[in-house]
Length: 162
Image 1 (cartoon, rainbow, N blue to C red):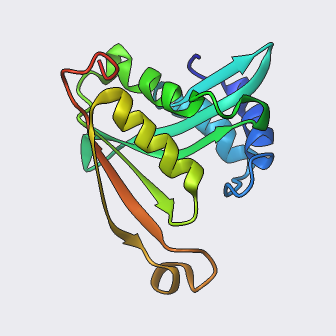
Image 2 (image 1 turned 90 degrees about the vertical axis):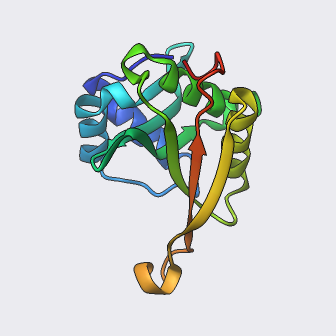
């Protein structure tokens, strides 16, 4: 696991496109993420192939909160807890010692994401809470399922968080 390089942008784009039902972004977006946001993103490689990706950013109005935008794990790397490991790697970075919470949004049907973040909570002995955030009809014009806001208050005593 490592910080991405801008040259990883097209590999990230390909990974996400192979991880349905994730929303795909433009390759340009992934190039910006791997360049401008490399300190808040994680790449996981196996045998020279990108098999995992976490994109995140510090919330501008709450810099001690890391908002996880997207988590992708290649089909051949699933089932071993890689997503939760990448989240742990991200919050354990020295430059993130002031991160006290993680937030993300998850649709009700995305059981893989729910499992990832619950596993992360178990690993870090942290608490997960939820609230309504983006509603299908109000925010997505009925074209995308509602997104639940997930907040994880990090346990500062857990070795898996710092």
